[in-house]
Image (cartoon, rainbow, N blue to C red):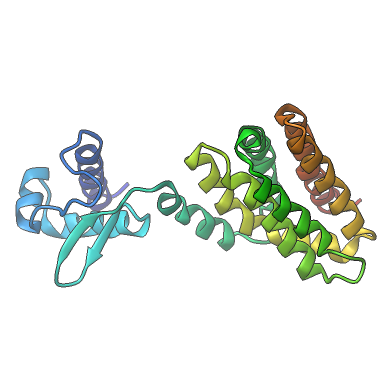
Length: 230
């Protein structure tokens, strides 16, 4: 690591620590550049690089002509960078992304179970009704994403929900490929969604968790077979 990067990292760590210890709270404006650089013990150039890096991951908000502020630090903001990075790796890491999703999403589904309303269930049913054998692959993928996002959004763990939101776009292409190359994609998706939905309606979050894992695992296995040339 170069000296310049080391100094910038020190500035990043210092600002992060100020947020952690409460010296800077969400929405607070950072002290003037000269003052903050002196407090941190770095040059103003190094401080600018640190601020730029923290703004990219949505920790800081640089407002031209106004100053630099700590963002709301809401989970959905902080996880945006995850979705961006994963989108850059489309085509080279879908299997790994699906593995992460398989490990995380079943937990979100189970936790969401007691928080789903009748209106939610009606919406989930409609998403299934709208799909037919004449639906396009794009329609299938859109409905699949909406189905999972609605359930995940009811998970009380906001960080888990936001992480899964970031993973959704990264796995969309895998679902498109599966729809293009496998027969009965609509029937298979509806059947797997039905098992998840019935378990949730019955208040069986534990069972819904199992079905969610199997559903995502099916796509993961398909990706692995393609990678192995099977």
